[in-house]
Length: 409
Image (cartoon, rainbow, N blue to C red; front, side, top):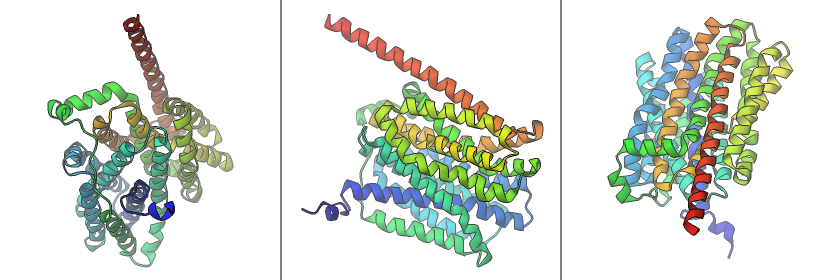
C-alpha cells in the first residue's frame, strides 16, 4: 500500500496535523499584518503614538475577554466548530477594516480579531497537544511555533501593498482565512479528553488552582514571550529613536533578525526537549537569554555585534512559548490541558499589554539600556522560578519514591 497517498486522506492524523499547522500560520500572518499596517494608516491619519499603541492593545484585550469562555464550547462541541467560527469571524472582520477608518471602529474590530485569533489558537494547541505522543510532542509543537513565527514574520511585509491599494493587505489575509476554512471542512471533529465525572465535580476555579499547583512554571514562558514580543515591536523603535540608532537598521535588520533567529531553532530545540527534558532546555535558554540582554547595552555602538546578539537572542528565546505549552502537556493530565491553555493565552495577552507600558516608563525614567534591563529583570525572575520549580519536583519525586519503598517493604 502507498502510505504517501493514505497520508493525505482527511481522517489521517498526518493530514489533520498539517491542516492545523496551516491554521496557525494564517492566524500569525493576520496578527503580524494588522500591527504595522494599521499603525501606518493611523499615523497617516494623524493619530498620536500613545493612542496608536492603545489601538494595538485591543487585539490582546479581545484575547483576554474570550479566554475564560472558550473551554466550555470546545468541550461541548469539539475543536472543529470552534476553529470554523474563528476563521469566519476573522475573515469578515479583516474585510471590514478599510471601509470605515474610524479609531473606535478599528478598536472594536481589533478586539473581535483577538477573539477569533484565540478561538483558532486555543483549539489547534489543544488538538495537537492531546493527539501527539510525549516522545514527539516537542517536535510537533515546535513546528506549530515555527508556523506562527513564519506567518507573523511575513505579515509586516504587507505594509508595502498599501502604496498600491489600502484594501490589498486585508483582502489577502481574509482570503487566506477562507482557504483555511475550506480545508477545515474535510477534517473529522474530535473532542478533548475529559473525565466527565471530574469535570462536573470541579468548577472552573478549582481547575485553575489544580493547573497552578501542578504546572505553574510551565505557564510563565507564555507571559514572558508576550512581554518580550510586544516590547521589541512596540517599545524598541521608540527607544531606538531616543538613543539615535539608525531606524532602517532597526526595522530592516535588528527586529527581523530576532524573528528569523527564532524560526531557525524552533524545531531543533523542540527535538532536544523531547530527548533531554523540557525543564532543562527552558532553564538553559532563559540563562543564555539573560546573558545576551545584559551584553546588549555594551554592544549598541557596534551594529554588527548588536545584530548578532539580537539574532542569537531570537534563537534562544523565540521557542519559549511552544516549549512552555509542550511542558504544560507533560505536567498536567489531558482533561486539565484545555484549562492550562486558557491560562497560557491570558498570561500571553497580559504580558503583551504590560511589556510596552513598562518599556515606555523605563525609556523615560532610565534612558540608556532601558529595554535591555526590562528584559533582564524578567529573565532573572523566570530563572529563579525555574530553579524553585525544579526543586519542588525533585522533592515530590523523592517523597513518592519513599512512599513506594515503604509500601513494598
